[in-house]
Image 1 (spheres, helix red, strand yellow):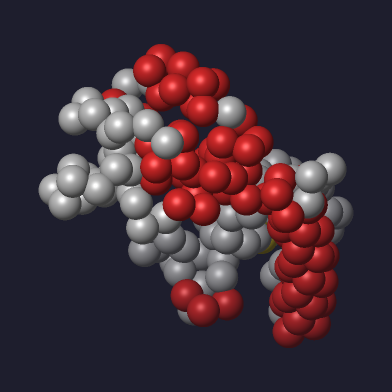
Image 2 (cartoon, helix red, strand yellow):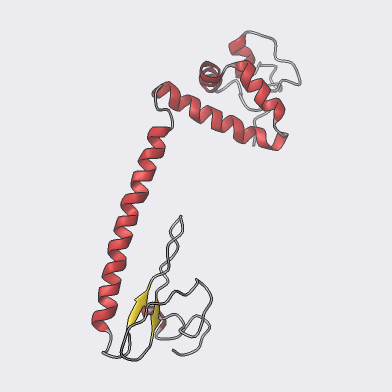
Length: 181
């Protein structure tokens, strides 16, 4: 929630103090730049300018302003630390982490497939189909298809149940609707 303590003690908000002007009762900055956080407005002003921030806040609906100010403050702080890349460094780091974790997940899925195939009895499990993973990755949903001699690759949309059911090692051969496989 936005802070409104600036006018209760007759102390100007951080923006008005920084700009050396009187903080009026309807100050657009007061709820978002409390006097206890002068560095927050200083960074935002240095990167975006007070006039641009005023225009932006006036164009937004009141319930959107706090999120906008928090985003501006985050970007401004990142730009002060790294004037060239700003938030891109943090975003790149997180994307690399997601990529690394996706590789770990793929390796774990491969181990599960290997484990599932090595513990199955011949003739029961012919093929294993994994659904494509949307971003962010969803829980593993393998679909085992029972068939005759030749494996046929099939695609089953997630959550459709279908005639094949979903076998998971921890549900003892029962599909998600409670029936036996």
